[in-house]
Image 1 (tube, rainbow, N blue to C red):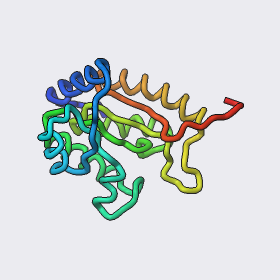
Image 2: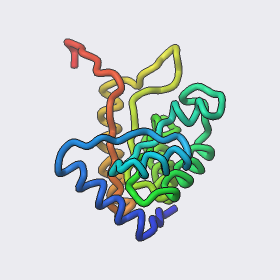
Image 3: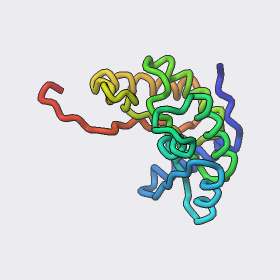
Amino acid sequence: MDAQPTKAALSRSEVFRELHRTGCFVIPNPWDRGSARLLAGLGFRALATTSSGFAASRGRVDHHVTLEETLAQLQSVANAVEIPVNADFEGGFAIMPADVGANVLLAAETGIAGLSIEDSTGDTSNPLFDFKLFWLYSLLFKKRAVIIMGVGLFIAIFFICWRISPFF
């Protein structure tokens, strides 16, 4: 499936990229369209959804909302405001990079300006992806997603917990 971001989403992606290029900025976390409108009305220049806040608003814990529910939430929040919205996309709702990539393409169609992938698995018995594997996957995925999409979606891949190892 080819991502078809709207012209407005592309413009917001350009604004979001420029915000990152020019320095620090505060980016609050709405969990629905109402909180997004409130925060945009307060003058924030960008927003970032919160997976834990969205899950809590549904009476669940983080990592217990489906991909489909998340995509609907992203579209609702992105369409509620005219400023860039970054998606808290948990671990990409998949393990393998190709599957994460397919899910990111779906997210790109919601109108978001950026997207964050984290190393948290959501599994309490194994809470973080293997650091070396996640780092390799993240580099390969980031390059592949930008090439496939051909758009300016800002993709941030970050680590929830920096782990220090003498073997790394």
